Image 1 (cartoon, rainbow, N blue to C red):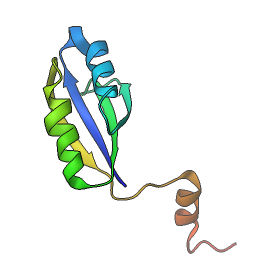
Image 2: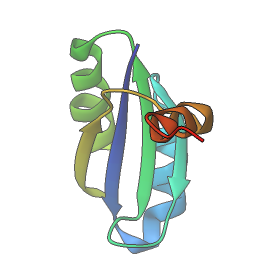
Image 3: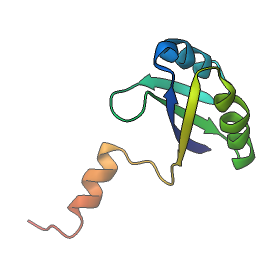
Image 4: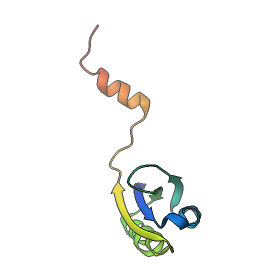
Length: 93
C-alpha cells in the first residue's frame, strides 16, 4: 500500500467545501484543516503509483477552489514503539 501526504492550498472562502470534496475522493482516507503555509492536508492510500497520479492529478487538483498541491510520498511509517526502539540501539545500562 502506497501512502502519500498531499498538501493543498485552497481559496480561503472555499476551504470547508474543498475539504469535503477531497474527502469524498476514492483513495483519500482523511483530510485535515491545518495552520501554517498550507490550508489542508489529505492522506491518500492506494495500492499502486498509477492510482496515486489519478487521485492527485485527475481528482484533487480538479476540485473547484484548489489552487496548488504538493505531494509527499511516504517511504516508511514509524510508530512510537518503533522510534523508542530505534533510539535505544546501542544504549546499554
